[in-house]
Length: 178
Ligand code: S3P
Image (cartoon, rainbow, N blue to C red; front, side, top):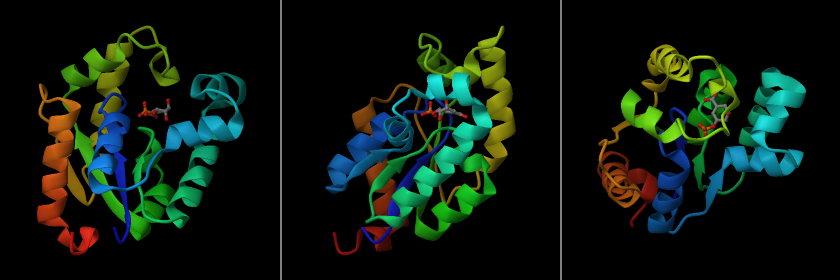
């Protein structure tokens, strides 16, 4: 690959699962930026939010992205808020292909509702929060270089397979002669 493939989109979009599978298919390294933040801090994302707050987390997130994007091309999954900072968008655009995993609200909700790992959804009305968040973030996500609509019922394998195909068709330069 001649640059990174960077998956962006909402919590529950499948960035980590699909990213891992996409990397396997392309024979590339896979990195999850949230996991990198957690290992650098030796704390979970929830602990970082609780102890140091969101602004602190966002600063660490930008640092980690900068480091990952400076390394050899890989498949990177980002946290749902990463694309909202202009600084991060610029870095990603300079060093990689941004791919928005566009997933509908009900599918997102069904995936995130049972998990307590997302501090931003610890509200009185988490589904309302998710809805508002998707509405306000969609215009930003839609500026990704590749907008990839995920089909609701598809498995990780099916999604990764369709995505590999989309990248081969729309960005053959990225994969070189492969
Ligand atoms: C966030 C998404 C999370 C994590 C943090 C904030 C967001 O990552 O970075 O909880 O702002 O949407 P995932 O998208 O991997 O859940």
